[in-house]
Length: 186
Image 1: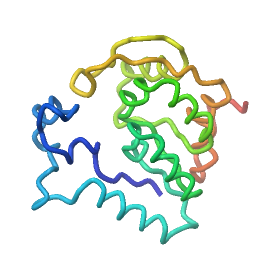
Image 2: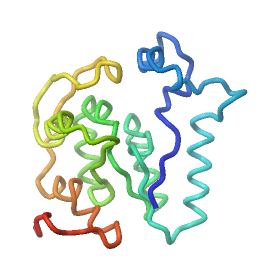
Image 3: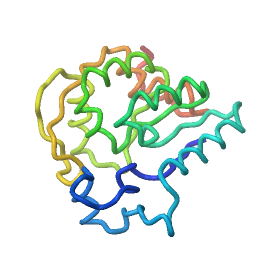
C-alpha cells in the first residue's frame, strides 16, 4: 500500500524568517498549513498515519517522501524499528539528504532493504542530481530547485549493493507482480 501523508513539516510552521521553506511558502500560498483552525498539525497527521499502520501489521506500506523525515533520519529509523512492514520512497527530499552526507550514508547502509527510489514527476533533468548525491563523494554543489534549499549538497557515496537495492531491487521485492524486464539480475 502506497501512502502519502502530509507535506514537509516546515509547511505546518509559521511563515517567517525562521522557516527554511519561507520562499517556497511565499511563492505557493497553498503550501501553508500552520493555521490550526483549518489544518491539523504535522505531528497529528503522522500519529494518525502511524495508528493506521499499527492496525494493519500484515500490510506492506510504502510511505512517500521518506515520511517527510529526511531532515530527521533518527525519527525515520525509529519508525522502521517500530514497523518492520514499512518502506519509504525518496521523492522530493534530496535537499535534506545532501546536507547531511555522513549520517545519510550510514542510514542508507543500515536500512538499505527499506528504501526505494521515487520521484513525483518524470523530470529527467533532475536525475543527475540524485545520482550525484547517491553515487559520489562530491562536495558542495548546487541543488536543482532554488526555492527548496538555500544550501549546497554533498554526495553520500553509497556502495553498489545499496544503490542496486534503492534503485530497483527493493521495489521488485516489495511490489507484487512488478514487471522485471530490463532490470539486471545482480
